[in-house]
Length: 492
Ligand code: BGC
Image 1 (cartoon, rainbow, N blue to C red):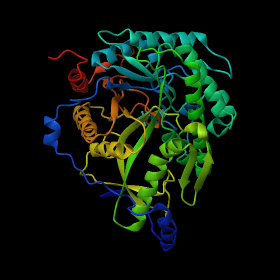
Image 2 (cartoon, helix red, strand yellow):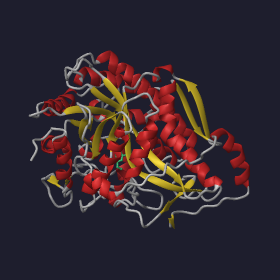
Image 3 (cartoon, rainbow, N blue to C red):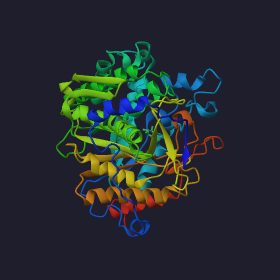
Image 4 (tube, rainbow, N blue to C red):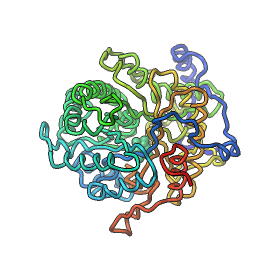
């Protein structure tokens, strides 16, 4: 076992444990023992018996692929930490990224090659509304061309799922305090309303927000993303406003998009892409179990619980406690998206050095387990565990992201098979999973890792190929097998 960072469990730990144990209940860090057998995965008919209309596709985000933005990330990309280390690995920027703003027909063609019937893509708020209330009709027109091109793919259209916010903010919002600004939810709802008016006749599947939990963890707790803050109280404030923004945007979309783009009788299907991580305790000791359990609760459950209850309830014991009614949240979701990548086996460092990210735990890695290029454990069983757990919520589930940083492209085919097996196993147990989207369609800007994390089914040579050709990796064939099994591509 390899441990990251330092941990300590001093005598004060006992008192805190006693104080918290009551509020957390029993079964801290409960682990649902399950281990997949590779032979089962190998002989499994992927997605067999998936319900009609199952969404099979890919995902990207605007800032990671488009290039040419002016937002908080383009500022952050130019900066560095006090010790001189650039905010982004190697000082990489998104000046051009994958140039999808110009090369989007290549992306549509790539998605069509895969046999996908859905593409979750983003629009960039700072591009469409560069100043408050100012709408860029030319930019909206280009997004409309992309959406029309997706719908025009044959033999079957590619349904767009439109993401309105994926981590980046226009400078005018940042100037007022970003997500900490209490006017941000209303500003976002106004943006959603205009997006509905501009794109509603082409879009039914809406995803207002991507991963508020990842955002506040990185931007307000670890200080690794803009605005580079390490303050749990400010994190809670930003998260509260993100939840309000989701609720108001959902209402605005329902009010402004009355056009049923795919003719199934429903003009809007609104969801949230929510990141989930399996937290398992590194030992049977009470503090490890405690930290696993409350990380799980805060990170995985506070957001969906708040939405289901119509109350913003956020809890990081001793640090953050929010409980406020927000009735508009209840009923704001038609589906819940899970973005699943990895698990963390955690050891408490509640009372020791918090390390550079300020996390109250250290991640204990087992070198015998497989890891991706960014060092994240590959753990397909975790997707099954999460799907089974999330059946308790009242919404159909969609895997809105699943993917692997794998520059060589050799791990991804097996990764897809194992994760689809996980999804199918959950479905076989009655979990209502209605879609799977692979992250990502193409290699892209991987936030603070720059261009080091390669997640694309299609790879791009950013440094050496000025045409930024999208070249298929071996996993394209794996994905096409999924499409074939759903009848989206002709069988061989
Ligand atoms: C994010 C993506 C990111 C991916 C891989 C997800 O949490 O939504 O933007 O590229 O993880 O790190």
